[in-house]
Image 1 (cartoon, rainbow, N blue to C red):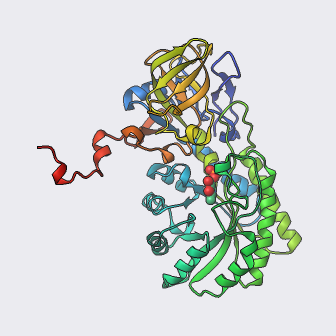
Image 2: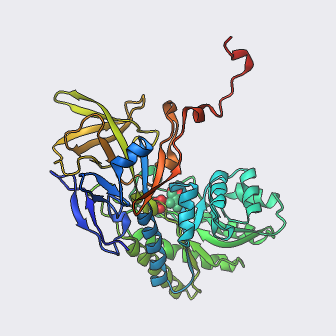
Amino acid sequence: MVSTPTVEVAQSGRQYIATEVSASASPNQFLLPLTAQVNAQDHLEIGGCDVVDLVKRFGSPLYVLDEETLRTACRQYRQAFQKYYPAESLVIYASKAWNCLAVNAIVASEGLGIDVVSGGELYTALQAGLKPEVTYFHGNNKSVEELQYAIESGCTIVADNWHELKTLVALKPATPVRIMLRITPGIECHTHEYIRTGHIDSKFGFDPDQLESVFQYVSQQPELNCVGLHAHIGSQIFEIQPHGDLGSVMVQWMSKAAQYGLPVTELDIGGGLGIRYTESDDPPSIEEWVKVVCEGVVKACEAQGVPLPRLIAEPGRSLIGSACVTAYTIGGQKTIPGIRTYVSVDGGMSDNPRPITYQSVYRAVAANRMSAPATETVTVAGKHCESGDIVIKQASLPETESGDVLVVMATGAYNYSMSSNYNRLPRPAAVLVNQGEASIILQRETYQDLIRQDSLPERLIQA
Ligand code: PLP
């Protein structure tokens, strides 16, 4: 339960406005983690930890993950399904958002399952203690080795295409493999082209026109135990109706699968609920989203006279996106009169590739001078050798100087997990904060880590 004052970034003039957060606040509707406060030193505090002190202690840049915000989001998903869905449900964490041992262990301890998309994600999930019964393996081009590993681990495989179905059959598993079929629903929603997956021209899933032949094929393979159907229409979605519509489309598919004798009793409606990255973003709450999804499925099942399936949702961003910030240290500044001022930070596209990949917009605060008015509009630049390495194109900030700690908000999803060593930058550390305690969950990489996989043939060794 959270009922402490938190901070929300102001529209203009001030860096933040204090906001009382109710116990039922949906984390995805806030720019900062739910425990954010400004302390007596005028510093940003998260999870009871002073972010400026964290940077001194653990170095910069630093991912700061708030355990309470992540746990609150997990509970809200589970409780909303219990409230609005009269049959069995399961929430699985789309771990592509941020897959590491600690995050996986937290979601597992909240009763969630997990969605993985590679052998590496599966390995990390199992090492974190996730049970194969609640682990679902996605991906449009799983290798034979990955499929073999998935079969041996006992997780459910979300089959994406014909090639994969035939490979699974050819692997001759000792017992029938639990699979779901991923289908492209042909539902359009308004989000970035690269993160839209539900429209027909998508690399993922079976085309709905092929359903009958897919169902027929699967029903004839004793190696395959098709328990469910899956669809995912995209990510960072603010409209609620597409997910309501998706439920009823999937129930129709389920009825069709039954005609082929397939024991389909699970529907996985994917993830996709958006989060607040800027003050103009207004996503629905977790509870509102779950309610629409459940009502869509229940209504469609009633209309078609079919029993309610076990309902699965696989959110990623809305579970973890708002729970984390990235703290950078400001270095140099460059003012081009009449054009702009660049404020450079010690990270960039290697720890957060979303702005350069999706033109994603973020907001920031100067964490060591929280009450200073936001008097300047500057461009926050990363340190990589790419002109496009811009963290925030137009950031409203107070006057800043070298050494200030700049906190970029809502960086929990698709930041660490999409990070790279571009320009041979070691990946930042990540700390988990909770009630004044900070624990390292990812060590900062070292220069030695950077050359760990390098190999220097003997003839190139300098005498
Ligand atoms: N499921 C699938 C198949 C996905 O591809 C994704 C994201 O791309 C998700 C779930 C999670 O989406 P989100 O993070 O928007 O909730």
